[in-house]
Length: 133
Image 1: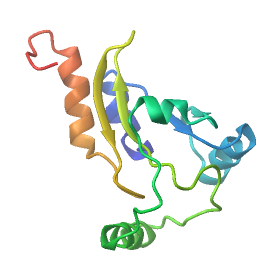
Image 2 (image 1 turned 45 degrees about the horizontal axis):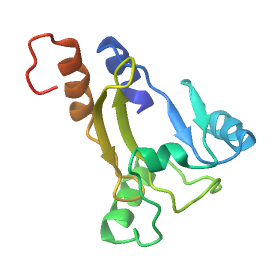
Image 3 (image 1 turned 90 degrees about the vertical axis):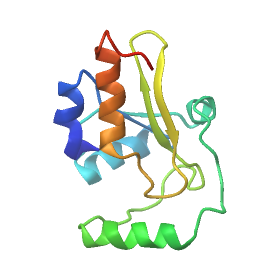
Image 4 (image 1 turned 120 degrees about the horizontal axis):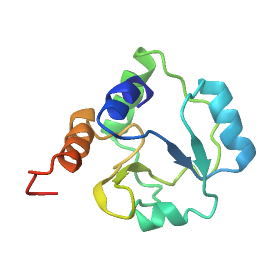
């Protein structure tokens, strides 16, 4: 996502991440991957539950390995697992206040929403003529 940070911010959004490990693990993640946006942690995983993100050990399949190969070919490497490795994530866009604009749960590791979907949701929020907000 950090590769798209400028696009997200120019559409009126702010990028941040929520993990489920300890504060020390979050700091290590930021340092290890040179993350330049805010990273929070919720070891209780309450935010994951509120977003409908599942905890599952049954996500390893052909798509998971295909995504892993693609990530590795792009220069990404799996670091040490921290927090709950079975907790799946996703993407959420919330307008100022509490209006939910977009929510998509990942189906497994490496499954991320297309940036176009996220930008469309952000632009729709900023468009006073949008009907399907």
